[in-house]
Image (tube, rainbow, N blue to C red; front, side):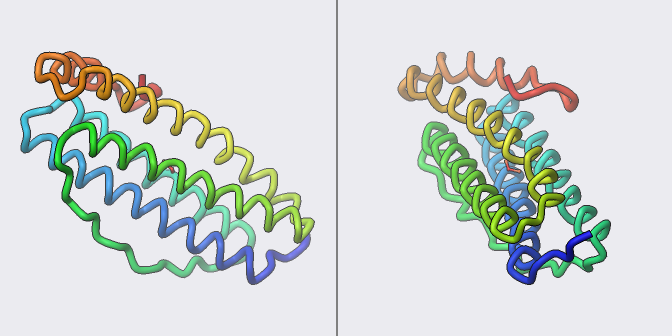
Length: 170
Ligand code: FEO
């Protein structure tokens, strides 16, 4: 099989870090929400943090399969500053868009390298990001609809709290 290029290897390393940073960010959001007594939203983000760790490990294991030893990067601490729940959900949505762009860059690199094994591997992440953006945008739009209204946010809290480890995020 064609060897993975240095650019691709560096990109995969960066993606592992980004996925762990996502987990870190969502755990921080979960903690913040729990502190504000939004336990349902906190549950959703806690489960999302678990999912992001699985994403990181999926890439880690792919690199091992391809004969590479992943180089784990430094994880940036979350800002931990959200004025309200809408601002928090906005950051979550924009973060997912950022991660999608990173995945697209990896696919572009794999195609440039004619590394079709990596193109195939990354397709799972392309599909996953469609779902991740969709769900985070859906929660954000609902929160905006409630416009900071406490009763509305409590309804949203109940809906987000129904998430189970196995299911998708709606
Ligand atoms: Fe693994 Fe939410 O990106």
